[in-house]
Structures are given as structure tokens and as C-alpha cells.
Length: 66
Image (tube, rainbow, N blue to C red; front, side, top):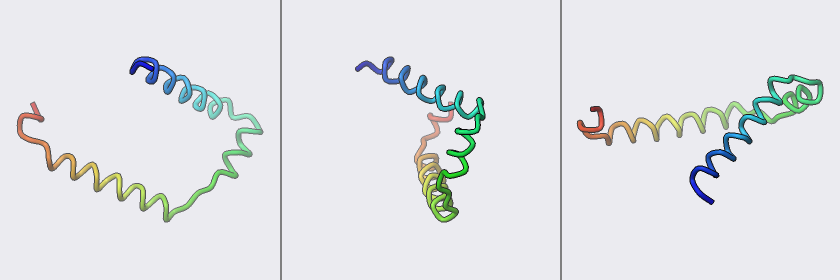
């Protein structure tokens, strides 16, 4: 599989998901309401993502900023 194919297929899957959410039919609404939500998991994943991003930014050299 080429990089183009992988990117294209990922884009199609994401567009399909977005189309379902924009359609907003009764079945989609029921699934969205049943989707598990966890405040603790949200804080952990956002915290880890923020820490990783800040670490990567601090490791950039002056040449990376153009």
C-alpha cells in the first residue's frame, strides 16, 4: 500500500464519519448519546498530548522556526 492510498482511504473513512454526524438521523443521535464519556480519560489523554507536544516543541532547534 502506498502512502497516497493510505492517506486517501483514511480521508474517505473520516469523511464518512463526518457525513453520518452531519446527517444527524435518529439512529446516529442514539449512538452518539450512548458513546462512552469519561472525564478522567479526557483529562489524562489531553494532559499526555499536551506534555508530548510541549516536549517536542522544546526540542526544536532555531533552524526549525525558519
